[in-house]
Image 1 (cartoon, rainbow, N blue to C red):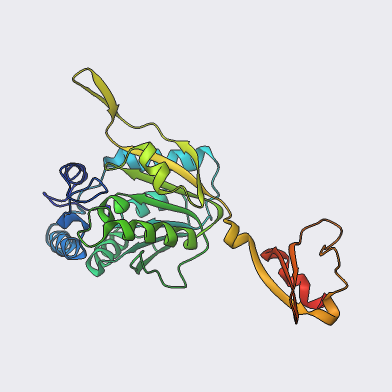
Image 2 (image 1 turned 90 degrees about the vertical axis):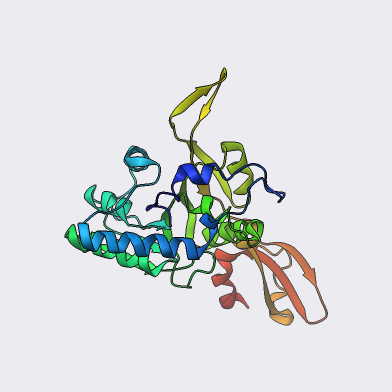
Length: 293
């Protein structure tokens, strides 16, 4: 979704969709937020590539790709770290990652034409270590999980313009991101629709700001600002992921009168019911319970 852009579908057009919105989120509904639009875009780009070998445009320009790769190199992200490009479009960013040595990279897009286009371009480049999947990120398959790095260059922008309940779709995006990204994994987002402060609010649950990346600045009418926002978030562990109830038979587990393991006080929230002793403890330690219960 994010890489290719037709004459009407570039990042600048997405940015112009803010303002004058009848909705409460500040964005006017746009075709840029619909799957039909992107299917049509990539069908045309696929035909253009097949006829002329033109790979299409790059959202936010080549500098946006260089900025992200420099960050990954600066923080010594291992070359075998699992990387997911959300809304890969024509797959150009995947190719750049592969050229820099990253070997465990995956690109997804909900448009089959985008995946076909990116597959053709990758094949032309002679690369074989890139995985491509047709996936709707708002409803990802169970196999899409366990990534160290997730990258978004314009996909969240497009989702924000969806005419059909964009607010709920944005919330679902955050839930999907939390599901596919490892704890302490990094989420790199580049946006032309959202400011830093707004993105901090959108990704406030389960993520914390790790770093703001420098992007081009502009001045107009005595005021200055950034044309795009580029942030790095790190996934944190939600309370709902850290704790869950584990039940044990009362007559055996009642020996845990202090509800502790190894005297570390790792188990809390003790409450006794008629038949069950409930002990809420870190899920990563739950595997120890069967040997005691």
